[in-house]
Amino acid sequence: MFVIIADQIGSSGDADRVAGALVELVDRFGDHYPLLPERTAGDELQALTSDAAVALETALHLLRSPHWRVGLGIGAVRMPLPTSVREASGPAFASARAGIEQASRRPGRFAAVGAGGAGARAEHLGALIDLLLTHRARWSPAGWQLHDLIETGLTQAEAAERLGVTPQATSKRARAAGLRVDGEARRALVALLADLGATVEAMTPEGAPA
Image (cartoon, rainbow, N blue to C red; front, top):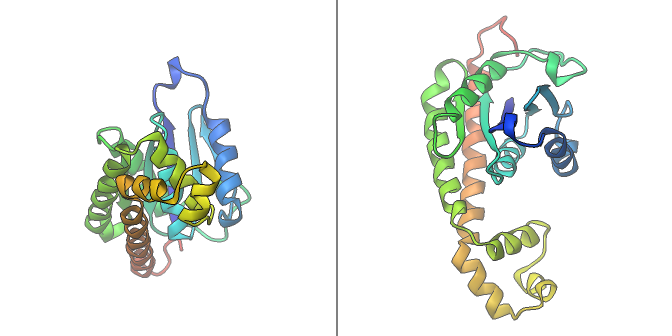
């Protein structure tokens, strides 16, 4: 399982952003969360999923804003699940807590931590996600706009029509942002994350939370 903890940066001098972020996460990924994401502290939220793609996209969605740091925990979760994510427990939650603490010291504001003996592999995965975040940090507003349209399922030609520009201009914008590389990198990261999640679950000792 994957646990995401996000902490709002500088919340004492800023507006509360947790409520809005929770609405966005539920709108985008709600069907893939076994328990709805919730506020777990004044400026913190927590989400749980068994889907590696949803775990990655949840983290990336939050990190798109400069107002969040994110920890991703990979490990077992005690079953059966309670009715609230705030009541859930297990090694994945401890890993996510360690991740959010590490994220505060990292330039990408993100850290992945694996339970048990998977720590090194999770750290390697986190380094690759840092590269993706660095790549995305260079995107222009126009690049993000095209990315968002393509993520809805539109082709580049359809996105060009929606934007009111030529297909050639859209293709140039996609190349400048490296959207193809971004998509391929995310698919590879999801595969690695899913494999790591399965490995950590298999390493869970008999009788431990699973």
